[in-house]
Amino acid sequence: MADTEEADKHCGKYLCRTGNVANLCRFCMCPTQKSDDPRREDDLKNWKNIRQLLKKKDHDALQAMSQKHLDDNAWYRMRFGQLTDG
Ligand SMILES: [Zn+2]
Image (cartoon, rainbow, N blue to C red):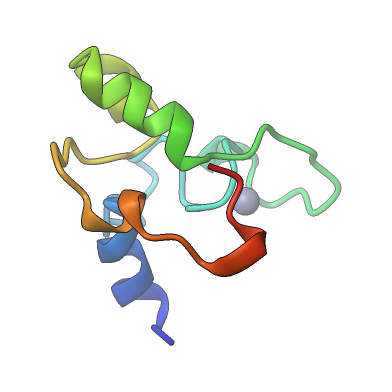
């Protein structure tokens, strides 16, 4: 279990939640300026995509999704039973 701040740290997501960050949400790509619309259906963030960007050292793409550059996030190697897709 984790609160929002802890979960953001585990995911490597920016902790800042001002209008200057691209994404407030750690689950989806909803732009901050559109996050007041509960009917939006944006692409989901996932560890495979983030790991690809990390391998490519694509800092611009990571910043565009408010994601820190963590070279070796231990959570990416964790498996949680049948629910893990990797
Ligand atoms: Zn979201």
